Image (cartoon, rainbow, N blue to C red):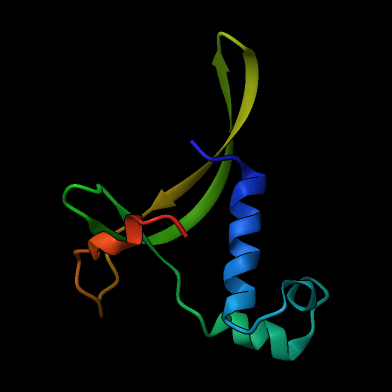
Length: 96
């Protein structure tokens, strides 16, 4: 399980690599928003038999365990994109 800060850091690194300044997106700069909108993001799951799926939404749910009550952010993955192969490449599971 990853934490939100790790994912945010990775997301901002990927945006910078793609030439998109995350600060400009957060500030609502139209050119930066357009550039970010043009990038498709697809999920992959099952490393041994990788499948692709559309990232549908984020949900925050309560989770109770031995440490007490926590909040968990869930990312729901839907069906594969219609215009893509339903099988994801194995290389997507390599760490960025």
